[in-house]
Image (cartoon, rainbow, N blue to C red):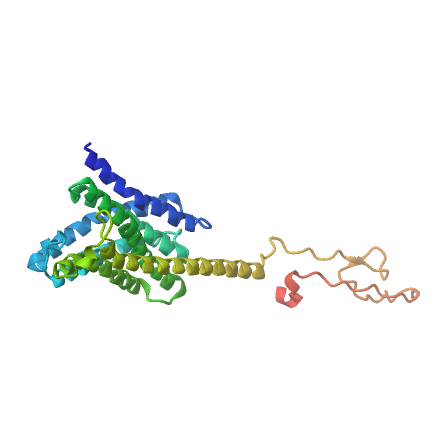
Length: 328
């Protein structure tokens, strides 16, 4: 294979490393490896319908929409359309669809943290394919490759993981707790963050041509100033997801402890009922045994035996303190 293909495939490495980080955060109650692989693969394959949908939406969009990705557009409206309609909405929709179709009804999806784990995994599978495609098609030189690789590794990959995790988390919270914005609310939050990120990147070249040349300042060809706002959006989203992660883990621990406590309080019902006490021999009738040792009058015929103390009555042992009447 050509060197460019190998360099493009390296673009999947940041997404793979990010998957390992999310797996480490869920190490206390890890998900099955085969399920994680299924979600990542489905997330990667979801890039295919996004491409088809994106092409259709481009045909329905503004005339100069094709110039937006090339940085040559002069329309902020075209940049916003590209960011939200072509990119953010379809991409976040297929990530959530991946979680819903692949793992939502499986028994291993049993915690709030699972929404974050599987949502991020779907987003990272998508990001891996998108990175490879961008690095294969766009760079014209080695410096362009390095700039694009760094930008996507530190911004786009964490961004896709963050936006996928947000949608999955709120869907899981609504499922287990019956509260929060739920699937639709999580989707809209993810679209807002993702669309704002892309809108800035698509609008920055237009702003620079309009006179805001300071946005082009950077180091070694990397426009640090232009990338500062997208970086801020990704950092805010990542911090938010991390807080959601801590809350999800705490809520899952609390729910598990409550379940264990409730199970221990009920206690297991004995497999076999406890044995009744042994019959008690009474002096009233030699050799006779009577349960619970009731006082039996002596026979009427013959001399009356000397009075004796009646044997003490022994109550039978009843499981869990129930009365004998309740055992009928």
